[in-house]
Image (cartoon, rainbow, N blue to C red; front, side, top):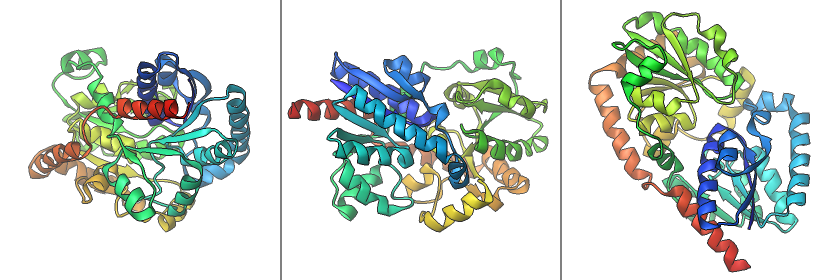
Length: 374
């Protein structure tokens, strides 16, 4: 059968790649065309568009790039029509994907969503678009099933979180070898810096993250470079002797890290699953933030706190993200009772996610559904 998958960022590329592998196990003749990245291509998908062409952060940035976005939407519709898939699979990336889903449903294509748009966080009215244009939804967060079924009478399938699979599939990292490979001090503990994957957010986040380094000379800071950004992009951040850089090795870095400063997003959950105490950071443009705080209804922004429904990790957002505050919160998680409590809560969080096998479970359901309609 033919599958058309659309993912628009680094996390979607990761989860899309594992879904492709699982689909190919369930359907030996699977023909997969996709929007994604290097991981999805390596897994066996034919790349129609790389997510590097799609990564715009915040409301203002989207407005500035509207012409390119509409051009990409038109290309996507034409590409789907030429490919004639048995199903169009959407992975998060709601602004783009819900537009394509509405068109695809109208044209008679089967539509599946794997990794729900965060309609529970903002613009809940989008649920009407989902119910009208999506045939099957596969959700990865435990509270999403209740949200869709009890609040909106829309049946969904909870398959567990694919990050558990992604982390389990990685080969173990030898800390001494990792340090040697990247020229790190064998004696200093590592503080990981995860500033995001888009240029706009990295530029905003990394400067303030690095501002705390003089206060922690006994530690070494390591930036996790995003695969979507060139190595040269980080050059001007690396003038500080305490700062090191690795690219496309976030999991290896987290497996060796003592603590982390993390831009809000999927990375907060990844950091938690590696049992690394963290401070969550977020700072957008003034315009984007003013719009966001008027439409986002959540008490928390990090997946860790959302899943636990209480504050497990501190979130420093917008004006609260200062050098002083970041220094205080980082110091609090390096040792002592707060650090120990966070690690205990991480273990509870992992249990809530439902165990491994999300990609395989979703793939089996998708293929079975398609076969039943043949």
